[in-house]
Image (cartoon, rainbow, N blue to C red; front, side):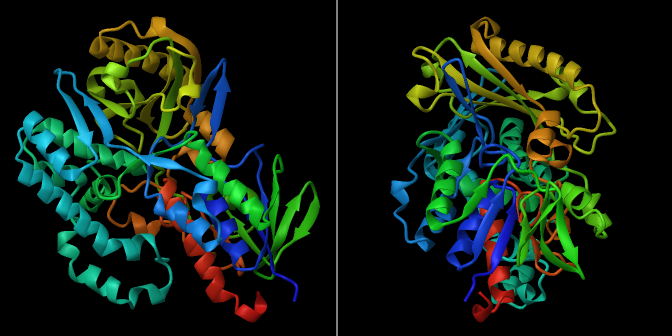
Length: 496
């Protein structure tokens, strides 16, 4: 029997995961990508002997990647290897405070008690509550479609609803953290987790205090060969399974006939398929690929998450004594970054963090040098004067880093590349350059994300960071899993 053909638009992490799962379900999978390589936002850059990971800098919950190899019957380590980090992050404060966030919860609590005004017990209790929130909600909010009625008639859902008072959805993350800690430096540290989904700690609900659990319980990791090796390994796995890839190929339209997705159009030529899955941001998917379809206005017009301004710097010095891998320099934008956040912007967060990720692999930079990934959160592209913002941000960041590190950082920069929301939007088709699709700045955000399927067009599905369950590598991988499960249920075995 002829296999059903699937066309996937885009080869981001979610598109790759979906392709692998459906190929394992005996579909004939074809992936079309506008860029010349897979990965979406997860990509890399080489310049003058330096290699930079250009996208996500944090790797957690590797079990979701390992699962793709397990279901494929492939040896995980033959494709992809990683190490667990003993230190999650290093924090630098303006008052001279230095804090090492250990991966081990008890070590973290012990160190925090020495640095901040807090007891070890209070830190451990916070992590316990963080775990409880995750355990209560993961199966509902992350692992299943929120847009299928069957999801709400499960034991896990009923249990989560019965414990809703403990989830903190009626408080902001900042309120939860201020109730937990009196030291403003510690509040700021835990407020930072709102940036993991591009939101503001002053607006996103307190349930987001579950995010530290992902780091402290599951750990943080570094892939051998850099973050981009995640995309490369998944692409290789997909190819080995028989998935077809077409790079430098732009899909102009999804063919819709009688409310059924029938394929795609490329350079005026139709390509038929039994089902179509868009890994493209949901807003341009409606605007460009299915412009005649009625878009869900309330969902499409949701405020976008934050974007990023990233400086890739080749630094002619090694800062091993400071351990600059995954560090955060805390700061207050009212003093240094006020120009970034306009009152008209949706994303208003008075805490700006400078995130630096430096060399993990010896070959990522010449001997005696480091490759720095320097990022601050900024609003999405809505027509701002980004050239001015970049210039002023660069100056202020360099002043701050030089002041805290007591080194003239600008004089050490040998290589520089810059990524701003305009380029993110252009390179990845992410609406306004948003990193995580819609923001999570209200308690109903999870329910307002676009579903993983079309309610009006049969055989049309969606995966990726702009739809349920959200952005970031783990959630994008889960998005692919949700789509594959929906497809498996809706296409009978004899149809496959």
